[in-house]
Length: 318
Length: 286
Image 1 (cartoon, rainbow over the protein chains, first blue to last red):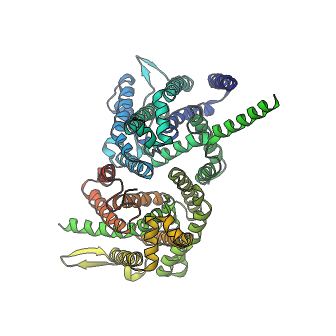
Image 2 (cartoon, rainbow over the protein chains, first blue to last red):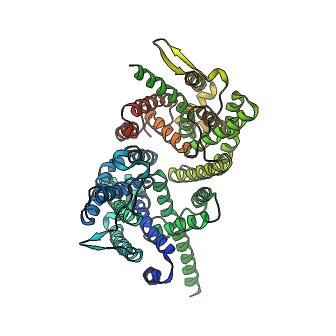
Image 3 (tube, rainbow over the protein chains, first blue to last red):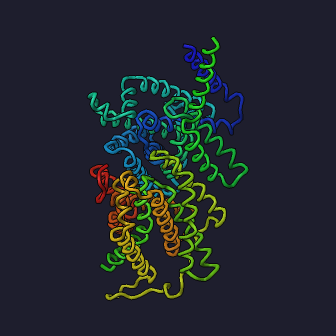
């Protein structure tokens, strides 16, 4: 019970901090915070598979990018309003995950490799199919999102919009992972053969998880394109797919807040390091190495271990 | 018709290069169950070192050998002190070795800069030769094909016809039993990973002479090598040969016929194959 109280208090403090942040920090931090929320959401999507189902997907940048490109192309080239473009983007990304979900027929290293290949198909299409996707330059001049003539122009307004979407997603995600479906996923992660012998259709569960995860990634793509106001093949790159997985692990895989903490650490660090050091890719590489070898449970894992130790100490003293 | 033949030769020469890289990758996976995403970085770094050696000494042969040899100790240290700690956790291996590749790539960028660099080739490899039928083709790529066949044949003989090869094959099948038979499996690991890193570094020099070396080349070539290995089957040397040919030809014809969709031509068939036969053409289940 005590742990639950602490959790609620921490969540409320984090929410309050997120709400007052625009009044406390400058525009640079506002863009960074918005970016953290968007990539945190993408990391959360990846972590539904990674932290709960035990599948390591390296193609989530595809759903993210397909949805972002769909929005950009509809808005810029066909002049469609946000009310059409945003749902279409979400739908396009999710449909791709319905197709790519067939990857769940494989497991382990084969799943990793096939998703790498799938990711490269989308990246290659965006990069090479220049007549449609704009090639290397991508699609620029995406307008601000507008619903019925009211546009979200200011950075602060968009930040609040993203925050609201992200909080709604976190609540939905929390319900999902605590549901029997979420339990079944963790059961499959623990031992697939045991779940099969209990009568679960494990592949169908994993497929459903893959599509839900793809839909969340697509939503992050919609938020991203309106934040960035342009999109290029980098959004679909292998690097994005792998970095968001690292975000989930750095923050704490299998938790809801972890991917956002991870996104904050990685994006914050990149901004900070690149301001004084040229070798920032090497520093990112070191973060990969250090995390995997010495902190595989991430920040949330460390927090949990510390609080458990404190609780043990507390119960002993009583 | 002319073009079709030209593209076939293009494809086969790319296949020769890919085989150099993919054979090492597939054997380290087969024997040690290691997915080493830093393999592309070994290629790039080997290429750069070979480039510097060739510029300094004026000998392409020394560059090729030096580029390969220079990577061996590095690969050994990375394998022994970093990759070995992940056990058989492929997720951890992938993230760890991607991190290693970032570090190597960034340091190489700092040393050799961001421009496309071409490894200088000796005079006799520079020109073009005329084939029957009036097709003119760069000599270097022909020599590369011959070199690939030579390396492939030596590897195959080593793998199939020698005692060391027999032990490696046994190790791919069942490590524990080989170990229980009193064979020092650890020494075998070191041997195979040294061979794999040597081939990767050498491939960098050989490839750098016609594909050039630049930041990001490590990922492009790695992804091609991955596709090769997937087509052929993880852990299979013969599979790497066949996979290299398939990928080389698909890439050459794809770029020529459907330049907008060449990545799809390459990765689409592979994704479909993986769905129905994830072990690849020559791979075995489990």
